[in-house]
Image (cartoon, rainbow, N blue to C red; front, side, top):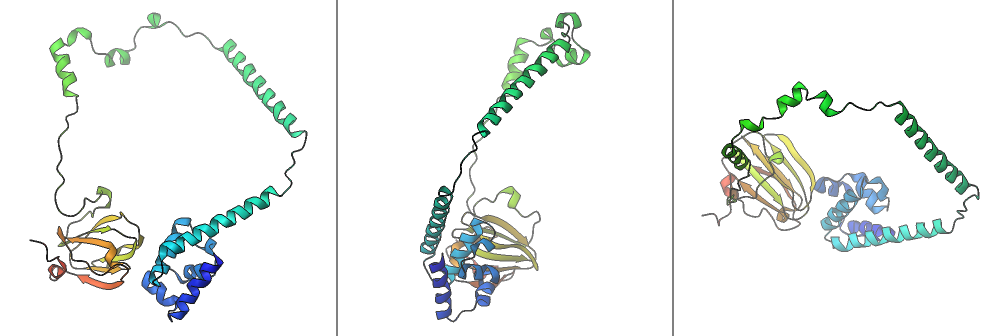
Length: 277
């Protein structure tokens, strides 16, 4: 990815932007941004974060993020091809005695299994017949008496176990949030957030950070607060928001960074979409 790394650094320098400024706006560590510019992606933990940071960085510079990711994938495939050819060129001769050692181990293993099975058969005693033992107290208790249940009761009992399907109608309003992601408390403000395009975000509820980091498409979460919700969005046009079941107007265009947005019980109606009846 040497040519791509050089292009990223050159484009940043032409715009007069420092790595510290990009780090502050995208919340990506400076060392990871340096790794992108120096073609040292092994310093970034995990393939997912490498592509996500590359997308966020190129989007910040106003470059084509899909083309940058495709160039990265191509360079990785080319590197793996060269490594495979290097391995194929090495001598990988197998000693002539190695197959005989494996065959001997298999034969010895089979012999050990047969011997253990023979000893177990000889030493084990046959279990007494069931009719000689009879039912234990637990077995007799668990088995219901056949004469104690009438045919009508049996039909009624079987019918009571048949599941009944009840139609469920999805309510209008914000998309449903998985129960595991819902806020445990209730408050004056209830924010539902849905990510349509990958976006870095940070949300504080009553002065406490409740989520931060890069979120991918499909991410949904509910947050509650009593006094204030404060938002930082790296891609304001890539998220949809609802406050107290009312949709909010777009907080910015795609790719736009919005910082320190304060939503309170007194001003949240200013963010509500004009299309709400």
